[in-house]
Image 1: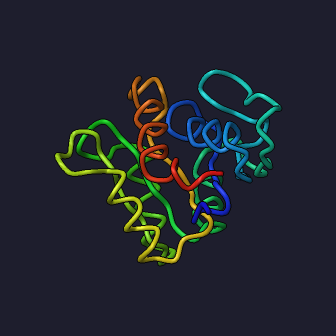
Image 2: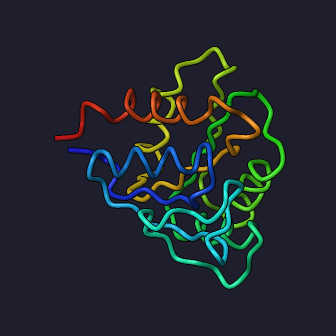
Length: 157
């Protein structure tokens, strides 16, 4: 049985959307907040992603509400250091006293094992997936999918 009961994400290109796509492909429940008008860098977020809109078109409210509505947040990145919205996500998680894990492809450790341990140690049922948009890190979506499959793929029936 999958230990993650629900995925939360904001629908931006890159890491966010990869988390949603992973959940959809495996029949795992998902939800999340997106900016008003379903704003994303590639235009309005496709309606197939069942996300709720915040009152504002900016990204920070969406980020805060997704962190708030989750047990914990995992931030994926290719680079070792977080920047921009990913760094803001980590700051918001800390301000809300929510567990937060940064997984970087540049790191030498086993990201899937780190994610499993993080989920177990923090009793995570609802996991917020965040990270850079596709224009910032073109390969981040593949990294998200690979790590989620390695961490939880054998637990999906």
